[in-house]
Length: 199
Image 1: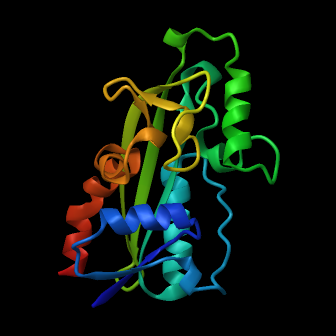
Image 2 (image 1 turned 180 degrees about the horizontal axis):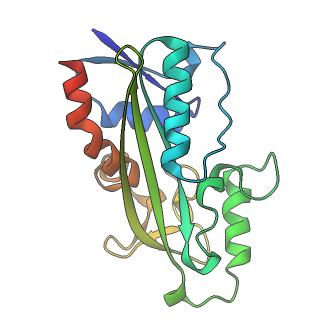
Image 3 (image 1 turned 45 degrees about the vertical axis):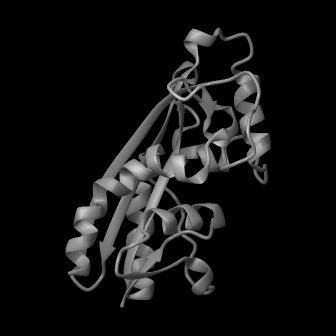
């Protein structure tokens, strides 16, 4: 069975991606299986550039088909921030909660109808044998609440509200989240290409 390396050490992301790729004839593993793998500096100015950078670096290191993603939150009232800096927004060493609380503090006093936001995800699939890079993306629209709700998910999920479901991303069950998340949409877009690679 062909191996697919996920270019991430984020356990939440690995679990989510494993779920999204279930049923494919592929052995999915994360970077925990490659403790010596190089750390990739995300120097891209877009999600797609960062995803491609990670996929190529890890793919060339492992020699295996590699899938990488870069995703984050874009808040209109903050001029698109945190954007590509979502995972390292605010102070170095901050955890998820500190980061979303920072977003909330920056939005203090901003009315509900001006708190539009989206989660955006770019995925890159790199085949080091064929030296082929494929890209796809996905997004989900919502708005930022005044305070967190829900205990599922990770990152900014507790403050990201989906009007259609009357719930935050952190209040959705994993099955529901995996159907409609930005990552799910990006993976759905790249699946036909992944299937081709797997023959």
